[in-house]
Length: 86
Image (cartoon, rainbow, N blue to C red; front, side, top):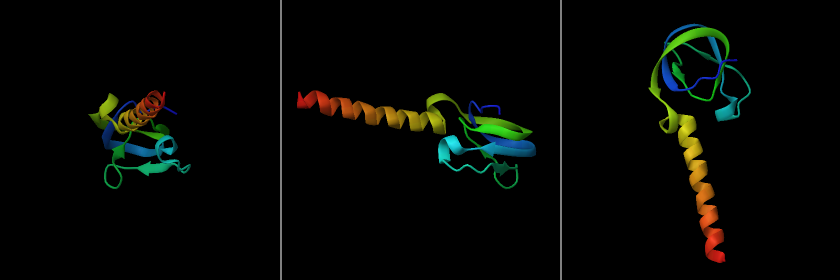
């Protein structure tokens, strides 16, 4: 159940299964391997196995950071519209 704190590319894995439901809504665990599906995303959870990854993005540059930034920007637009209406 470890939370991945950054986006990265899997370089070594041992029967790694990831819960990506926080980002995709899909409840099935995704099997990751360096050969077939090496991308790991921040905000997802390791459910089984182990692995090593090279970090490619953190914070607001990660996929979850980009999503949160976009959601925050949408909220700011809503606030601006309410302020203009008076």
